Length: 248
Length: 312
Image (cartoon, rainbow over all chains, first blue to last red; front, side, top):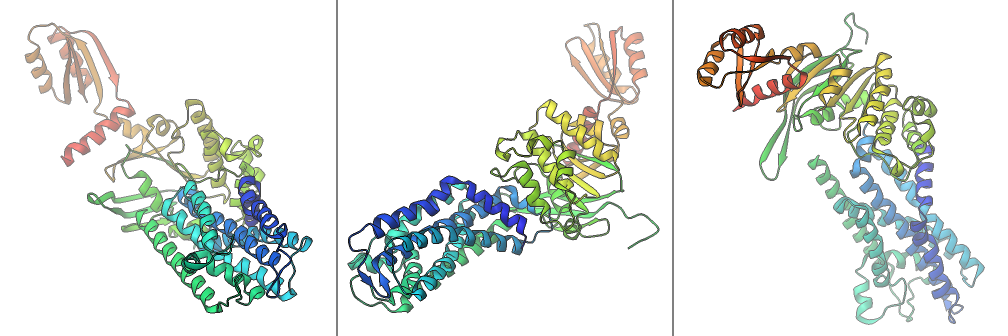
């Protein structure tokens, strides 16, 4: 780990105002609109209230937008020749990945912090454990989507593809029960989509499995969803890295 | 490891690389290259596109693994020489982050070396001090190339590899780049550069290694390579009648390689230009005789042409 390298990488991302808007400002705005400003925001939900439920959802959305973008750009940069440049230095692949992961995690902290502060300032309420544990789960789980971004970057090798992958997150977020509570068939389908398990897990310290419609969902559904999707993204990225090597 | 004989800067030992492709099976990019470069030499690796220069240099830098053979840099394998900062390179293209500034790029790469040269020093040596704050995206091709050069100077390498460093630069940017390089090479660094500009090889290198079809086809000083062009070219206007007989007679002269006709003018390539000139003037009634020394360009064409013939 190398402080100068990480700091310069952080500065690069922070300077990209368009990305930062989608990573931090937009989810924050969504929280205010769909959470704090609604009439039912003060209603109870598990170990807290509805505002907190929406707060965790939006923080999760911001965090995956950050990690997907950083993972994807890491892949594209390396294939556009930066990898060759780094190949002329003592830097090992493992250290590079570790530093990029650190950067992704730090950037993901920005929307989480911003939205949790907004939550504190508005109506979000919950137990201390629910606040702390949900923030931690949002951050750690977002790492899975760094691998998703990486796989897309490796597969399509262009900045446009990485933007598309981030855009696709909006659809995944709808299907993942992040923006609006789903019901019926749509909810059944939702349980198989990538963001569903992640956000359900992050909300678990608050909801303990209790759904907006009052039904109870066991924890294993969220855990299996996250595990399976992490495995799918991981295998895809590994296969694509190997394919990229053979082509050289 | 100290020995009595000085260690070679670079040794290639039966180096070969074969690529598998989807369309035509195997491509032999490099087919058995042996080469030794001594410390302090400035060597041009010259050859047409597809000669195997970039593939050979990639293997030297450890970016590609050889199919056969071995690369040794100051007695070490490539990856270890790179990690120790003994070898560094300016690559042909790509390889920069567009949203970093020039100085930030140098700082970032410097941070991964154990004991790099100071950032301001390499910026100065690459002539980039004034451009430090400029975004890479806003730098011209020549400026980006100088930035790659600055990055290559960071480990203070003993062997510097340049892969077509001036590709895509205009004439003045190319001259600026070589001026910068020249002062660096004068300081005693070993430099190996690939190029397909003959003038660059001629004016900057002491030794030329000519590659074609994945092999080394000539290796020597610039003067030696030039001498391999088949001597000189003699041309003269000749009378319009009996040209066939004249051409036959010229072809029979010792040392004549080629006789060409352009209208009433004969162009003869020969290692014995005096004999050709005498015959043209005295026996064939030739006028406007001109004798031209072989250029590096014609040497290049002659040698690579011979190779193609021998392959075909």
